[in-house]
Structure formats: C-alpha cells, structure tokens
Length: 295
Image 1 (cartoon, rainbow, N blue to C red):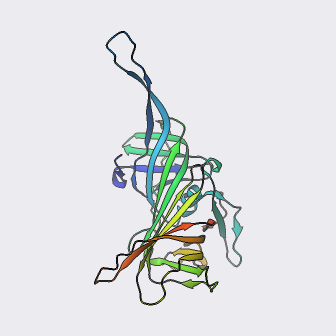
Image 2: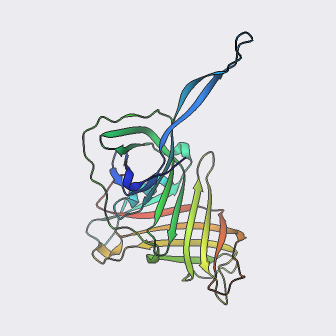
Image 3: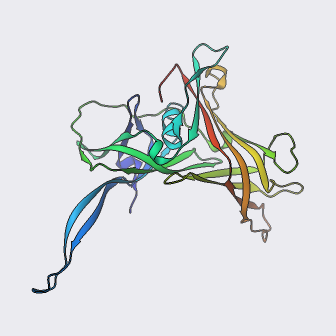
C-alpha cells in the first residue's frame, strides 16, 4: 500500500447533505480485490487458475480539519449526530452533538477520487471502519479515516465542479486539555504540560477506543492513572467568529484507564513521555455550525 499525497490527488466526500473537496494530505483509496481459486485438475499440467473478484472499496484518507469540514468529517468518524440545538444569545449558531456507534449503524457516503485530470472514480456506499485523530503542537490537527465499502468503484461522469475547501485550519497549539481525577473525585483542572494526543477508535464488530497522551514530565503531580473525564477543546485564533463557538469543537472521553507509561526518563533534556489509556466509558463530541445544517 502506497500513499498518494494531496498535491497529486483530490478527494470529494459527499452525502445527502454535504459535498466537500477536503484538504487531502494523503490517501490510499482503491478497489479491494481478491481471487477465487480453482484447484488444478488431476489431469493436465497441474496449474491452479483464479478468477478476479471485486470486494468493494478499501483505503485511508488523511485530512486536515478546517472550520467548515469539522462537522461533516467528525460526524462521519463518530457515526451518529444528534438533533442540532440553537445556541442561545447568538444570531445563527447551532450545536451538534456526536457520539460513537458501530460500523453497521452508520450512514453511508460517497467518495469521488481524482488522481489525474479528467479521470475521476466514484466509490459509493462507503463507511468509516476506524479513525485516528492526531493533535500536536505546531501541527495542523489531522484526521485519518479508514474507508470500507461493498460496492465496486465506477467511473464518475458528473460534470459539476466542487470547490476545494481552503478554510482556516485547527492547530495543536490552540488546544486545551481538562482532566478530572476519578480516584480523588477532585474538580476538573486544565493540564498545560500536554504536548499532544492521538485518539484511536476501531468500530468494526465493537467500539474500542484508546488515547495516547504526550506530556512533558514535570516535578510534582502527573496525569492520574484513572481519569474520570477528559475534555479536549480546539479553537481558532480569529475573533471574528460569533462568540468563538463557530471556530470551536470539543471531544469528551470518560472513564480512562492507564495501560502503559512509555516515558524514557534516561534523558538530560526535557522529557516528553507518552501515556497510553484505554477508554472504558463513552466518547462524544460537540461541533458548531453557522446556520442549521443536517449531518
């Protein structure tokens, strides 16, 4: 499997309400092919023969999150969007609650792939089987979607031109992390020594989520072994967005259990160690839109 980088391709993600040419960092979406073998006959040269069989679509899309694509991309990753709620004391802000559901309970979407001029391929009936959200300082926040689908790809004959999404991107240095310790029952507090996180979620047959936390090792209290609740909030820098909510999204993880501490303390420099947690509880997200939209 080889990645095709964003400057060599275009990916349009489309459902019944949206169509975005997402800011593609890299992708590997392709036809999933298997072989049906025919055993060699007793008589003859003993050659095993095979028939090519299409098993649908498979691959990966890595994209940066922008102010306009966050509602669509996170709703596809999580799988279920609750009914939108008007945000009081705003002109036209709506909040959308998202939650994780099994792969088979999610709605399908289409993916239009362009790798060469005038060569477009349509992958219909796609779903997200797993995803990975990566947040790191001085880097744009990236979402990796593992794509699966049952239908064979076909040539796309549509003539419409969907503009490339180039809205403002979310960056890791504008993210806050709030943690509540389950063992002490203490109030939530902001952890300013977290360098970044990676949320990994697999949704095939069952929902399994982990979060890897990179933090700077400091004297005194560390991140607890058991976390009752962790809230990750990403914001944009500009002040033009109404009440700063349009340029915000947050993810809440509950009941985290430490699996391993991969910190290397044999260093004379500042130590950035990784903690790996399993999520025993729920994972949800809140995204905002300007105007009421359907996800």
